[in-house]
Image (cartoon, one colour):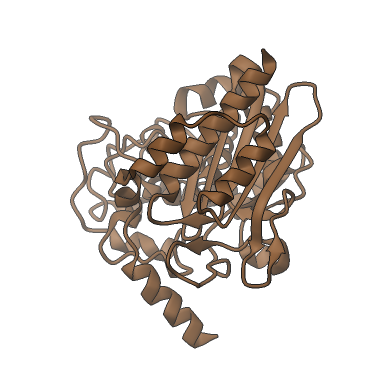
Length: 343
């Protein structure tokens, strides 16, 4: 097991960054974008595997109607286990929607002040994070703090379980800000790492317990978890990188959920049932209503499409090469099929 862990870490260190992956847009993906749409979502999902994805899950739910579940490819390639639409999946930064929702609820209750500074809540960071006395929680939620993103640091390794943990904060301490607070926008995972620590401080317990009680339980989301350590490994879809045989499922890197749970949460976020009127107003002012997520082996998309009143969740367990571009194209084609079906 130790040798396998070391191998995963070495492989992760050698893999290109997410940014470079996104910049790749091979002509094959362009041709797929222009190809005629198939008649059904299932045909498109099957075609996604033919295009090189190991496995894919899609959940689509139109308001007032029963959800549709689709899957193709492999849940576990080595064991030849077929993809399961109800499988668990690492949703990565989609988790920020849950965290931002918790911040909005705590702000509405008066437990947090969005206009208080990082220095106020974490005085030990004064002098260690530039402009800590000017950066507000509102700026952090909106990615306008200027705090450097720890996942962009040269010493960050996606192959370590510490990805997303408090330990990685050391990578950005005592480093220059990316810009003065509120003068620009730059996506930074460090913002949300710090917000989770601040929530825990004001609550007196882990923020995950608050999210479970105030968000997951009311929505009956029994297939949403905060760690791979909380789930049956066989229920978690395997994650792969192009040109590597390794399965990255054992890496503990944040939220794990089923597509259905993410879909139910996303609809409640968008239709307002998750919040009180005050909470909704606060949330609208600080964060977005859709998200994508990437960790090693896993890419996810969660969006609500108002024109057809449909939530569409897509999970792809293949990253690297042009797979993110391909996954985005496939997602767009699935939405077009659903739109066409509406007439």
